[in-house]
Image (cartoon, rainbow, N blue to C red; front, side, top):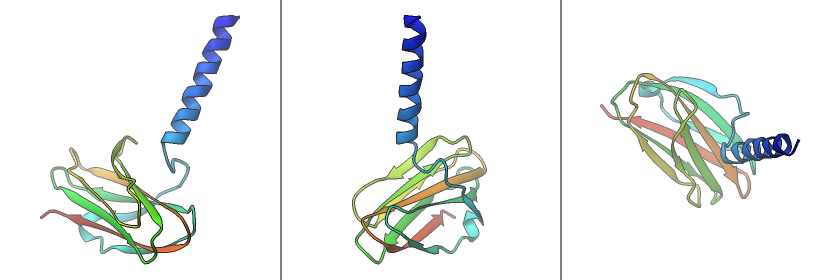
Length: 130
């Protein structure tokens, strides 16, 4: 009986840890198409708001994803590959974020943008190397 209680307690701890450390897993991403043709997006974000986007990439072509905001709120940027693994993040303070990734294979990447500290208009850009 003690081993079952310990097992259940350990599983609950793992589930809670994953829920805290994996931001925006419940946000349904909007598909923005091919990253090479993407021209950026302005996002009206509420305090504690978050959005998620999908873009498709070609293997071996580095991309840089950035955010910037009109207000000095705390914006965070997370990037996940097609398997759901986090491949990059910028959780520095302020509205400016920047991450660089070189995809290992063709596919979609998910971008999660979170905002805290008040409403903000955030610009999301992705530049793909030629």
